[in-house]
Image (tube, rainbow over all chains, first blue to last red):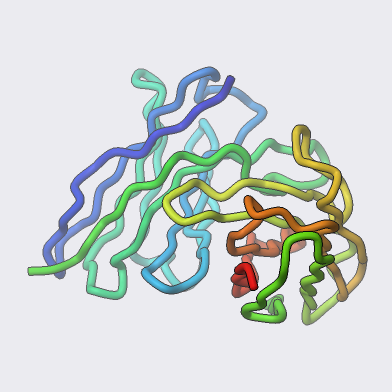
Length: 125
Length: 106
């Protein structure tokens, strides 16, 4: 059974880099069947897709964050990571990792299932 | 860019009620529309994919319909455990979630 779990600092200073890791169990991150993604939810707001990465490090990113976001895969540790640079208070959110199962010849990012439990990251000095 | 308009933003209903949420896309997205349930402190859960397909293990009181630009999500015979926020999500372009509908018990 594929399971995900986020980890990383719960507090980040403004202007610094937010770094999170998603550990994958029950599947190989090198699988050709999945894209591995990040989604966040700021307090009191809705869900926002951040970006997704393939095992070969091919990525899709939301346009509004593209210049600050890096997403990568570590095949040796079976996890993938998110880095968000130059954070502000607006980046305070619960961050989720999630999986998209590729539909061949139709969609790389059809839906997200399953998700990790989420981790709260607060940006504050 | 595709926009999604989900409504209502919140609603109250009673146990046993039928609840309907709508999601309107700014352009034709065929059937590339999914629905999620999100409870506080929990991971979002996929309920419906491709507009009308029930994800494995999801109770049959949940259903979805629609295509093109207009989609509906329905809960028949509302149960107390259905209290949550519900989101639509399109994937005709890059993934995008609707604004969410907060459902609580009357």
